[in-house]
Length: 120
Image (cartoon, rainbow, N blue to C red):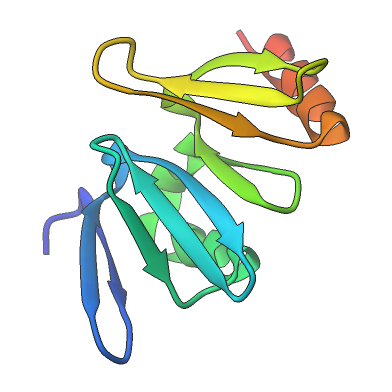
């Protein structure tokens, strides 16, 4: 199997997604919605904590491109464009085809902003 893809095998369906094209994961109760760079939304029967463990197990070192922000979202840091603590939003974009503006709690954004600012 091609290592660029992550496979989610549920009871009734199988989803095979190129992990670099995943923009973010959004919590939805006991489900997680995966949003891709072509604006496709896929619902998976795992909560966000299970999804986070699943990414680490299936992607190994490649899982490092994903960062959990607060309780409800995991982002692909390759698409991170802006963190606005006052507006409580994060903007994810490829600067060409898509831009997503996602609401995130202020405390979580402060932590992410400090973490990203400290990286070189």
